Length: 412
Image 1: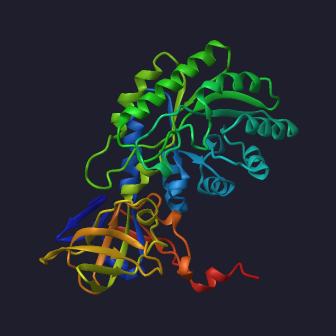
Image 2: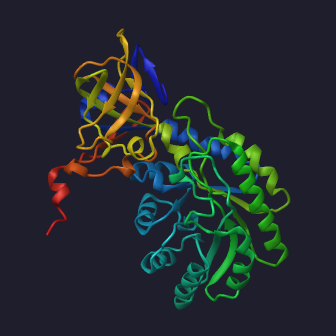
Image 3: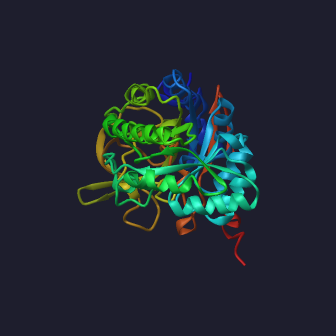
């Protein structure tokens, strides 16, 4: 049994009962499905098999080393946005030339780390950054491969905090200014302009904006090729949405059908940077009910996981399905599922219909494999959860639960 399913009313992950996972490692606990990660990656690989391509997993979605090693073993490249993510990618076995160094505000130290490692491309966010990369590369007698991130001013239709392709966003350069910038950049010692990139946002559930961005990138690439630039890469970023609420989202195959025709005749390698759509459905957060608390006409289900463990509901108002690990016959109630953090914004769900749980009952918060643990904090001096990986009926701990000693270890 692969992925998440029910067996005799019990929720299991890759054949491992989630009740067993909670008993072994406690709660709150993140549990990931190796088979679901593999399935998601292969769906992308198959969808884009007809064209030269590279799938570079965006580490910002989840940077646990065990999951990174799994993806590297499947053949993925890596999309990183910090020096720490670079070290994690190298540690996990990603080949340096399959790593793309993205992100606004790269420091001199981070650029030098990338040069020393020999990353495949620097995805530059500005003309000044190209100059900085060139100066540092030339000082080392190297030539850095650089792509320029362009901003096509396209609304992805997602939450404002994860929209990155509008003119008011901090990312990239205006696409109308790109050709002029790159004409100057091609004369910069230490860099070779090898392509362009655009990432218009995250949790995109309609293909129209992605198709429009691809069309804009293709037009710019044709102008660059005609101008004699030695480009070989066209990076369309990531952003494909996840079906958090059951309303349906496009698949990697749908994405491929929408964008591949836009690049006909270019002969460039297509780069994708998925993160959320590779990992989200592969993870659950297990949490135990501490008590039910009535307040007027509201019923609060107080659990041991809070906004410090899963920030997305508090930060974005994000919807995550919540279900009992063990099915049973009980009346459904509209409840607020709240955590133990001292904030009124500490909730996992509001006004949600849920089979009325009992004290000590185990609940599973679904689709948290991306932007779950990676955004966790120690607010209220609470240790971050443990993480476990299920694979072919076996379960292993891939990150132990923090202790108080861990939290104060760096204090002087």
